[in-house]
Image (tube, rainbow, N blue to C red; front, side):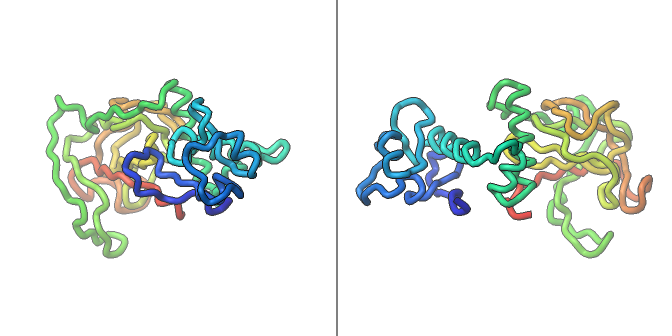
Length: 246
């Protein structure tokens, strides 16, 4: 089952998950097609299942594929084993389990999977300026590129979450100073750095919405904890997509 997940170029698909035919159909004859009934696949030890209720197990249908994948993981749960540990074993990666459970918490919290709304990180009535510095060189800590964009504003200007998400990390980073990281429902990690302070009571594990204040603009970073003032106050905002490897 380690090869169950493969990328597909089918632009009509949403999940990008493709289950190999030998897993989906089992030992069915080579002429097996997308209109096979789930009951037929079960006879030939195929794992394909009907997830949308049309009595057809279609490996190109996202609902069928997601349902099949979920059932495979559930059926392979050892006695008294938690879902998180089962996901870790299945994907052979603890980070995958953490991301999946966080996103599941979001869907349950908001009771929807439509979490596409977005907000600008600085309230529009504040005085700010934007500078595209993506890819610029940086020297502190060794030569590297700037993996984000800078939004310059005064000390204490509110910083807002741009998306629905879960607070994944909060605290000090010698490069980013006081920073906060939020994982959204699309598995994108939003990185907010050089803050002057965090929003009151915000903590790791909290669920946020677009527009929620998460901190305030500052000039922290480039040194040990508490270092500030080595550059003008601004928000460093970066976005990262998990690559499934680390």
